[in-house]
Image (cartoon, each protein chain N blue to C red):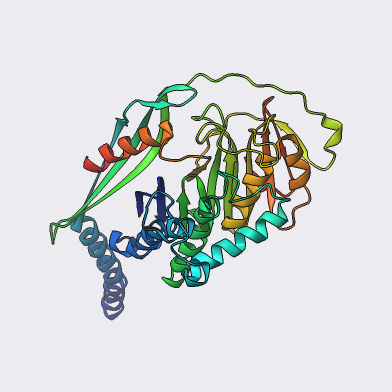
Length: 245
Length: 144
């Protein structure tokens, strides 16, 4: 059973192989709708918008909002400020960069609680995979070519995996090096795999913003693997990056 | 004579389970009817900010299973392929990378691959032409 909905400004695809009934997918999409209402910077009444207008104190925000913002701060330190939710515009808080991955991680926890064992939850090209695309015992994910989008340049496979890709191809050059305020050069995209999508996504954003220094940084990550596509059409990957033919 | 009857009974006893198995398969195939069809759907042409226009075509397989007893139909749609008949141009931004500086990373020339993938990872959002065109193609397929 596959269902696609446009929530949080992106297509959310849930492909579950354990259930046949579309109604069974409701709790997952309800969750994403709640996340959108709470975290959207496009909705004036969202908690994040109210925090930005100082109408809501952080102490009074919902535990999920506080959890996300705390994790943003941790990742900011971990990535030498290359992942920075304050970087988009001065003094405006926009945790969207973490919310996407975090909400998929939470959706995966809901899926686990529902007893699903074979599913993929994909939010705008970043995803969590579990079990397999039955009858296959694992999921195969194509990594899109940053420029020639109909092409897949690598295939990763796994039965318990998060995959996140960051690149210049989303909204033009929307990822900026927070230190120079310019788009990174020499790199077209960075894909990170690991257990947790929020972390993988933040690492992908940070490594991409680092430009040609990114691959060095990803080579030192623990429990997360990386593939960087360079502007000259070559790729660099860490030895345990889960590519298959 | 006695021996002959015994042999005949034995043969009948042996034959019985086979007859039942045959009846069961007949019943199973008679109860449902499966029809498959394949069709292409082309999404709307969408502007891609820097790269021109993009249009996506999906090839969808529709499997209709009809339960002949209850007359209930179950429809499954599966995207078999995603094609981009109108693809954007891109500017080549090549840059020199010092390969000796990256000893612990594996370097490869990227090449197109397409074998049996379930999902695609890439940076997309609603303002992205590929997603917009794909969405409209999926909506058309859903109505089929």
